[in-house]
Length: 422
Image (cartoon, rainbow, N blue to C red; front, side, top):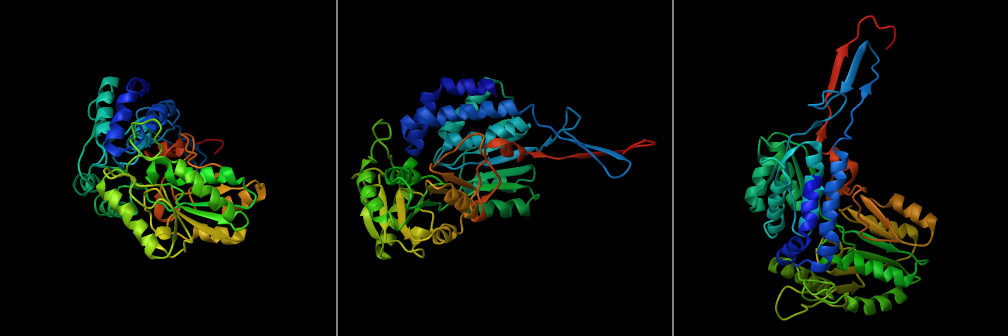
């Protein structure tokens, strides 16, 4: 695994280029952030591989018991077996290794299906895995469509677990296939409509920057994007004025250009989907503050878009758009802000901007989401488990919790005869 990571470091530019060509991701971000981070993910779980420990159990009867992992044979856990990984197109490299690295460390073999839109980096990783000495048959990359290749993995009787990141709709199908086959366990990281709550005591300039980062990073194609922004009424007007100015700083253009901050949507289907939601927002009565149109005559570029006067029942407030579209709303009290934040079927991520420790503590404990970022956003880290509540799925990526997804506990019990103590 360490050698695999070293090889990735040696091919940063090639991998970043593949993701730019496939997904329209910013080359500069891929080179500086995405690709180095996946090498670090491999090293993190390589370091965890020899620290998987079970326990000796204190039994209430004359029995001795411990949990087991072969081939060590003592006090550890077992790899779950063959794992099917189905990954999306928005972060092809990051999400590849959020699943592959912990399952390798756990001792599993795997079949990885990248999204049909972004197969190139996954195939390159398969090539590097062989160069690193990972045995044939341990990490297998199979390209194909979700309805065929993904469905086959989910329903296969010899696949022992499925880890899926993608839409809630497809997540349901994965669970159904797993249940109807061999009852394999499933972990799902699904959609989001994440709230950002900005309170009256916040630094307005900082709050504006965080809100824009939350929704426009990676052209809004982020499951944890802060697409619903709630601003307390005392600073709302000032916030809107500064937001309208700063949103224009998010320049749209060629993802290979280092000055570009927003690249194209991944394909024509996603481009048209985002534009259709913008039209829904206009028809339902929201006010278009910025953007709202294609950013170029050719290509799948969309202007960073902000709607104000949004109501909770509007489609742009309810549905995951997966594009650079912010729904901006006003709230009065802390209790009202919490109520608005939780009024969603999703529960993946959330943000709080405040100088008050009391507000931060109260709100972070009240929001139903898998992660709460306080005075920051997109605060991902390899040590921090990431996963959702409600219809955003279950199971965690990153951290030691990710490793445990690919292990199962075996209890071994032996009678004790004539022991003076239990």
